[in-house]
Image (cartoon, rainbow, N blue to C red; front, side, top):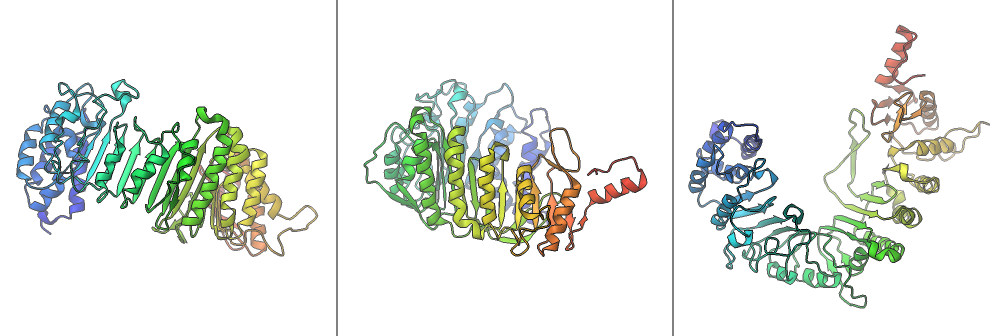
Length: 537
């Protein structure tokens, strides 16, 4: 194979590695980047690949970089290919600013830019505003398909500022292109969000993060109605919670595949009450934050959000083999399971590429979480218990005993479960009390064993078997052996038990544990006598 016929993916990887090396101010070795630029002259295909590697532009905006002299040559020889331009915090070395060069370059390339990411972390030296360097005439960015603008006011020392350095001009790049598909705006002030409707024919991805100018839920519905081709919608703190229209009849069915809403619980309630999700939606992510201004209604708002989550679930979720739950978080993963693929410690089964995810998280007071949120999350997934194959818990240390009882009551309904992960000590004790024979020999699960399909347990990070550090919770090795033997005796043997900080145990069909830990323990007893094995006695 000739050198010029290297696969494009390999070439792009080489470009990225070489360019990243040059982002380290301590490395003054222009050779790799010079070689990368020289490689762009090999053929048209290579030139197209290299000119589209956005990491290259991180060093090109530095007029003092050893490779700066190559910049104009590369741009000239790559015409008329479209290019990507990405700027970020790596763009300037410590203590140096080159945004005049940056803004002059980007405005000069506007006719060729296909993807443009601008994330300034400091002001330009002499150009007063980035918007003054942007051509704003209609169709002045004819190739632009992806635009990402991130302006964090904290770096300019003006929290919530609305002056020209954060405001979008009347024809910012996203409005001056006829083919924009992806728009990502963070901390950007737009005087009229209805201008987005000019992109309605082409826009498929819209991400808005913490804008100084926000809309009430009712106005957002009006804007989104004119963006019928959206496939991804992410609204993060984009709602004006102090402007509400409770009697509005504005309703909309979102045809997106990915829907993410992060906002105060009051805003989430108001917006969710106005939307439905179509069957095409395969990823839903909703996070509700605490708003002190609406503390008096937070309980009702949490209940209302849970009500809408139940409604969304009935609209989009068909299957739910995996459930992850904590005191304030729920994720339902609808990816069908394949054969388990065990790693060294984890008992994670293989999950196919097809994905349907639904998650909701509450960042509220503990009182509301205990009284409303956690019981409500369990109620959400209770109808899915018969088809759940993986149960995972997180942050179980936050669960009060009553909540642990509620959780185990739900687990008992999940008779199709094959994998339990994040098993805490309290969860383990409840398993033993329900599954192991009583002192008088009576066995509660001999006729109809609980969890007949259970194949693997994965303990949470604080649980150790045999012995562990002072902060650990220890499960005696004999208790583990008794549990495995009993499961085998009732015809429901385990295959594997894993810990976060210890090696996994493999278990045969007779309930015997076969693991490196167990072998080391036996070797310690036979060989050294007084030296304890890693799992102890």
